[in-house]
Length: 119
Image 1 (cartoon, rainbow, N blue to C red):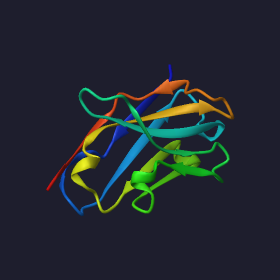
Image 2: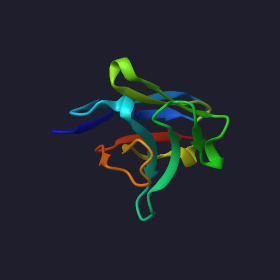
Image 3: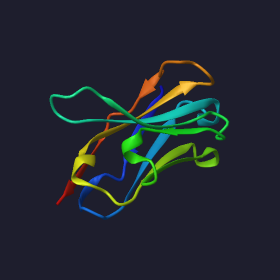
Image 4: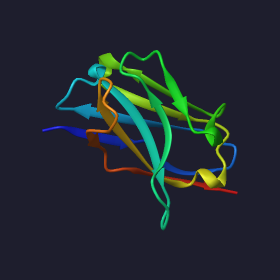
């Protein structure tokens, strides 16, 4: 059974940092690209960042470039999203998802972790 479990969310102040983790079980994460998404009530889920299955290519939504860093530790079967200089508009539920090799869509999703940034 495949599971993705996000952790590391919480309540922080503007300017603080958080590191989200996405721990995978039931699959070998080295074979998957990993994406992070976020969603606020009443809005569509938004792409935040992606790292290729080989780890050499990363992509970010413009609003987080220079502040967020996506990474992976294949030995730990875990991916991360380092979030620095957090802003109130970063408040959302953050989800990780995995996509097998070069597949366009995402095959599995986590349950999400809440990030709240106060001003």
